[in-house]
Every structure is written in C-alpha cells, then in structure tokens.
Length: 119
Image 1 (tube, rainbow, N blue to C red):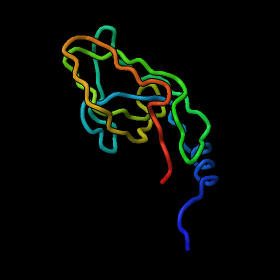
Image 2: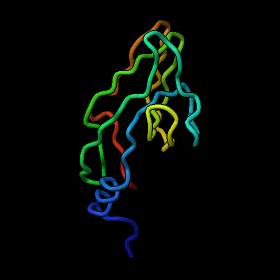
Image 3: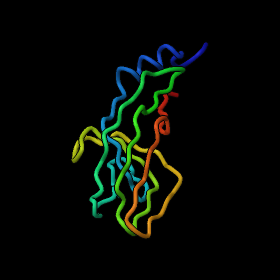
Image 4: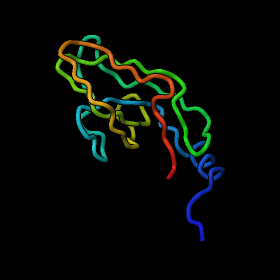
C-alpha cells in the first residue's frame, strides 16, 4: 500500500497551509525558536517580506528577490521563516551556503532560490 500524499495533495497542502510572510537571516542554527537572528548595522538589518508562487510538482518557490542589509562582522548561515516583520511566530529555517561579512554588506535571495516541499 502506498503511503503519503500524491502530487495533487502536496500542492494543495503547500498552497493552503504554507505561507510564511517574512524571511530572516541567522548566523547559526535558529533551532525551533528563531535564535541567532542578525541584528544591527547601518543601514540596519531587517526581515524581508517574501511572496510564494503556486505549488507545482509538490514544491513552492519564492517569486520575489529579498535583499538584506548585513552588519559588519556577521555570518549568514540560515534563512528563517516568520509570520511578522518583528516578533511573530517562527515557522522554521533552512541552511544556506555560509557567507561572512567583514564590512557592512548585502545578502540577496534571488527569485526561485527558496524551494519548500512536502515529503
């Protein structure tokens, strides 16, 4: 007997239930509560809104680019998902290729760089 959702079920789940509105950057594993989020800088680091496309083949991708201001001396190692631009509910994270910043800089998540799926 087959177990799990088929592609139509996965697409339905992603389109109806997975809509974090903000992305964040973290210097280390945020665990289950969103710890290690970047702070500070000039211009100051802030979460960025994120827009998701319709699910296809059991996967949903970001349809807009996010450009974050990153404080000097920071490392970006994870992207997190939140319900709000500050505070809010933390939904989880994913590791990214680690990037260190010796000076103030920017970190960009390009269109289609974030794919989330239902296993």
